Image 1 (cartoon, rainbow, N blue to C red):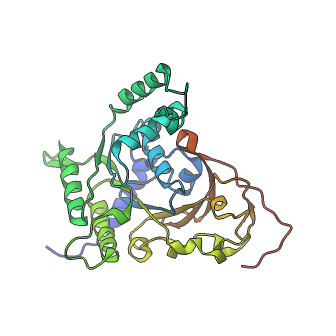
Image 2: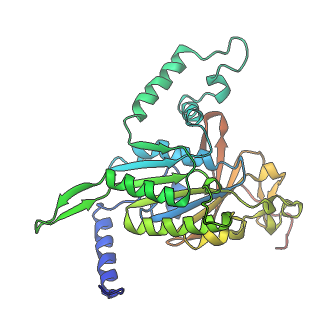
Image 3: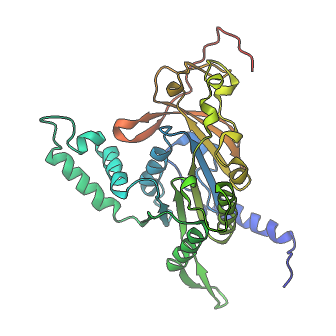
Length: 334
């Protein structure tokens, strides 16, 4: 068999995709945030890799939890599964955060840790039971033991084949149809280094290559969480109104390994935690610590830029906000 194929096949596939999207047969996975949907193709496309970067407490985990929690009711026309590689957080803790989001109660309150007389009420506990029963109907599966890249690849192959269905074509041939699947990895750094890998960078390069291979084989939307390098916290980058306030692609941990494979990269930062009052040369006014600046660093099918959100930690969710006003009284240099 030839190793090459005529480019005309790609045009045919592109035309087919355009018609399927026109008819509404092929859809993206809508997210809870309209600004993110606008930045993408009305949501996350399947057969893609999305990387979300951020320092600790930037809102990465809140975002992925909310995206999956609200994803099923937001996409009722899609028959999807979710597979989460959840290496960082104990499953029970993750479930508790979800209860916090749906009951609008703090994590402390749900654990009856707010002091005398503040024990969780029966009403709130019953809400948690109801939510657990509702979401248990959704096909969400979790792998919670750290894996190597090769182990992760093997699990994904097995998962996709387990839930595939055999269908007959018009000419009577059998084909295997795989489910549209969201696969999340809660931290790229937590992939175990294999014995043949010399360092973490090599592990990340191997991860990127495996994910790219898998996204071409199956209708998967990968979402990979990763850290930002510590350089973002250097004093010179935290002075008001400086270009250095902004996150750039090289701030992503393992940037060389992940950037080339990702279709969409965005990074989260809370300028208030870095004591920045006027964010970047645009001097966006940051008046509290829960404002999140979301930098769209790479977007194969759209534009890059900055969006703004607010972390509602008391209910474990993230909300869209308008772009903050700018302080234009000072002219800054990049």
